Length: 263
Length: 262
Ligand SMILES: Nc1ncnc2c1ncn2[C@@H]1O[C@H](COP(=O)(O)OP(=O)(O)O)[C@@H](O)[C@H]1O
Ligand SMILES: [Mg+2]
Image 1 (cartoon, chains in turn blue, orange):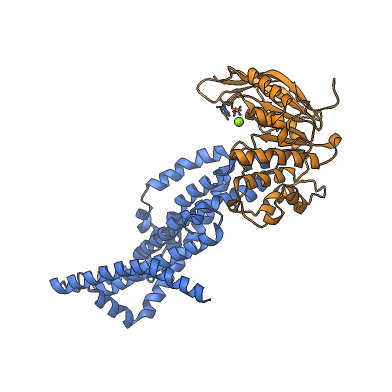
Image 2 (tube, each protein chain N blue to C red):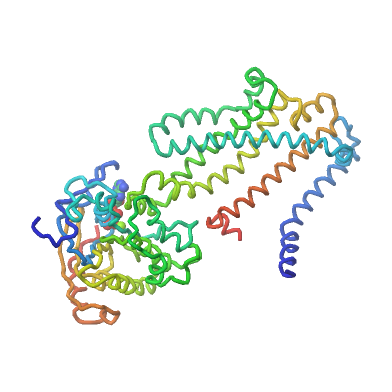
């Protein structure tokens, strides 16, 4: 137990201390610069002003952050589900792949956030446009990664299963799906933050709640400490998502070299 | 129907890979047979089409011409009966499954015949009884290949196809594995009901040590240039590699393979 505790402390010092110092330096420099140049609080607030606004009503920021996270997560789930389902079909049918991939690539090169304003027209002001935009941004990276993952199977293992007349169903569940996990999880590292972007932008255009709405209305009214508090909470959510995905990765991909090599 | 004791028969097999810039004729007019329960090696230089031939016999590839008969039927029928076991140069295990779960894989495949194959005793047979809960990345190369062999044996196939199964191992491990495989093969049953093994190698020593018979392929496209019966007593041990008959076979095979390098 003692040894384990010592291990945790050592881990915190090794991996936690350097970023903590870097963070403190950046915040300190920011604070010093703002007070040295006497920057107006309406342009860039000092970290202490931001902190003051945050602790004044932390519940407000957490609640708005919760909404944004909720919308982003629902969007992620929808976008991922559709993308993976489509990838399964494409992995089994070259004609379907040839038909849909150009369309998907066209989606990729389009800055999809540009449809933000249109969303109000289509979906109104509720939760739907946020979920929709989040899902849309998630869709393409997940589709491509899942498709690559389903295809990137050990050729020997595939031939072995084929030599026993394994059905495509059986090959999918026993070989393709587990092989795609590393791809799907690394795609999530991209798509979950993208879902957050989608939710925040949709909140700008169609919102009355969520951190995107807070950022937007605070900017309109020059409440910059509030704006920066909202951004800081967004950053915290992003970090939390990343940590959660790392833990998930370690659990699910214990067998994969990407995880083994960091042990 | 000329010879009923032939388990596997190849009739005028030719194969051309047409997807490249120029069609590549890999081998041409290969006809031979493998008697039931015999250990046959196919030896030949790299690129003469050994792997392609093995994949055709295993029903993983359709030949451009000719046909394969396993028990008188097409390879696909044998596949459906789960009568083919394959081991490749790479063990091709599923890294997220334990040793025991890898060996169990074929038994989970739809329509698997459960002939009372017992994963535990298979693992004991290949000497991995104590490693059943290990993951492939925790094993050495030789141990992984033992898992691959156990996995191929799990459905108790009558025909075992092996494509340079020890080709990726270091010299010491590979020598040990040869005699291990012979032990495993001999332990399966009495000679009459042993598995028919088709073993691809480019090692002359390996071919002589293991086989009842060696089919020598050479040239581009590859053709059968000799069919050598190895009449060395079994069980074979490593001393055999220094015996006079062994050396004679080795000289003979070497002479057949000269000029093989394209
Ligand atoms: N799927 C394929 N498509 C095109 N050419 C192939 C394919 N597989 C093998 N070949 C070619 O066929 C020849 C024989 O290959 P192979 O059967 O692997 O030989 P060996 O196992 O004897 O080394 C090689 O020249 C190889 O490049
Ligand atoms: Mg080969």
